[in-house]
Amino acid sequence: NNKNNKSRKWTVMSQGGLAPVAVMMAARNSDMIDNLVLASPPTWKDMTTAVPEVELSRNYNFLRNPVWGRLAFNLLESRGAIEFFSNQFLFSKPCDTAWLDKAEHELGLEVRPPVICFNAGFCQHRSFEEELRALPQSTLIIAGDGDKRPREEYTKYMKECRLQVLPGLNVLPWESPSETVKALKDFL
Image (cartoon, rainbow, N blue to C red; front, side):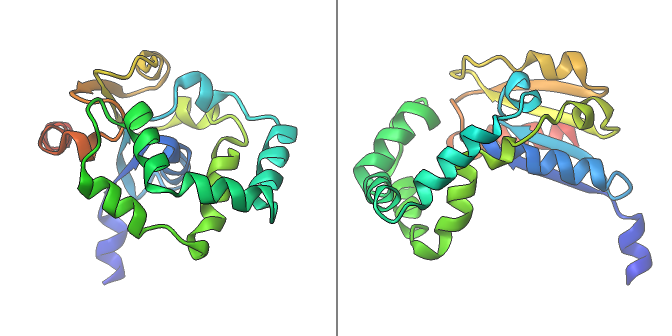
């Protein structure tokens, strides 16, 4: 029933570099979205500083190039590269087999277009400072205790925002699922 959907409030949660998508959803739908959760978002500086258009174009064209892009994806989509990247940037401890299996299962030509756009930097094509400062929703920033990138600025500049640090590095819902669920329950 549409009347019930209009009065129902939702919580939006994003992981990592998809934070701009969640922020835009919350900003554009404040009548429907009551809470926002950003797990390991980019730093405040990265969220409020646009990636230059020339850099976006260069990255996008490289990744779409039939020679260089194909070579890059052949390397980056290998299990060894996924494991290396995950262990360096996503997890505080070596990633598990289930993570690698899931990552490999999700690979393929049909999923490359959004991956190309994401890796080119299109999610950060502009500053989101105006939306972040104006958001009326309660916001929870979840950061890993192994992640040294600053997140305190969110609580300084946003209206109703708090920071929660959990064990892990970046992909906290995978790395610390029970702690993530508890943080969400406490927040909501």
